[in-house]
Image (cartoon, rainbow, N blue to C red; front, side, top):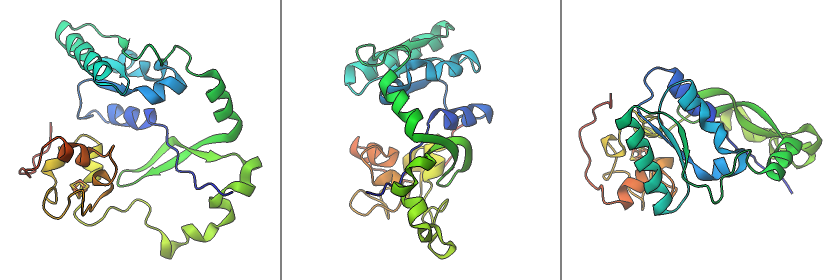
Amino acid sequence: MFILLSGRLTWPAVAMLLDSGSPGFDALVAPGHVSTVMGPEEWRFVVDRHHLPAAVAGFTSESLLAAFYSVLRQLQSGERFLDNCYPEVAHAGGNATAIRLLNQTLDIVDANWRGIGIIPRSGYALKPHLAAHDARVQFPDHSAPDRRRAGEMPPGCDCAQVVLGKIYPNQCRLFGSACTPRHPVGPCMVSDEGACRIWWAGGMREQVMATAIE
Ligand code: SF4
């Protein structure tokens, strides 16, 4: 068995955005699956270092609504805290067994985020003792210069800007014209979790003039 691992840590990307001074968001609804494994504390830096409201949400409408309500109330009241709106699954300290297995099998490495660039210590790689199963080690040709597309976006695709919260999906000039779920141009329209796909599924079918979100 060979594993082509593209695992990512999400908090360094959020930290990079916040440190940039123009994060494009006023509060964070943090992902429940990440918090279930790593513990809700993974997101405490958003409150402690950046004084933004934060709430962990699970994948139910109730949990998402609770998290939206929490961050909106925090914004209104001026109070700041890390709220856990997924307490039935996300517990303090995370999942000790999962964390132990991660530590036994994976190293944290610098990683390239498509369209964004290298974010230090934001990716996972298999540890050397698993090199026999690591496709990146066993098939080094896959990253030969003539096959490399790392960091490249399809021409005209603004996924990186969308993912960074700099523009809304329908501000991409291809949204709904060249790029639809049936004929996706960029990765954000491919996956059910992609921002462009979600906007499309939610009924946002019109393209709007591109104006940066400030
Ligand atoms: S609409 Fe398509 S081309 Fe535009 S950012 Fe989204 S995925 Fe990329």
